[in-house]
Image 1 (cartoon, rainbow, N blue to C red):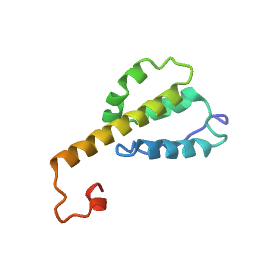
Image 2: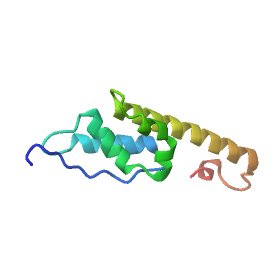
Image 3: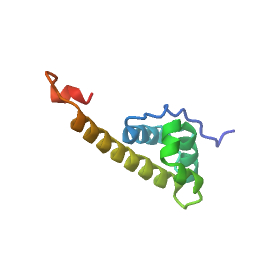
Image 4: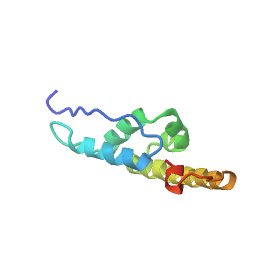
Length: 109
C-alpha cells in the first residue's frame, strides 16, 4: 500500500469547469506519497467525478478514451464545451431580457 496515492477530488463545478480542473490539478500535486502525473490515472479520477451534465457534454471523449493523452483531451473538451455553453447562454439572456434597474455586473451573477 506504500506506493498508492489517495486523493479526495472536489465535486464537479458545473458552472466553472476551468476552475474545477485547476483545483483537481492542485489535488494531484498534493497526493501522498508522490504527485499523480499519469494521464490515465488523472483521467479516471476526473471521469468518476463528472456530473451527469458533464458526462453528456463529453460523451464521445469518454467513449473513445483510448487516446495517448486521455486526461489532457478530457480537460480541453470539457472547458471548450463550457465556453460555448456560456456564450450561448449570455446571448440568449441578452436577446430576451431587459436589465431594468439592475446593474449589468450583478445581472450575470
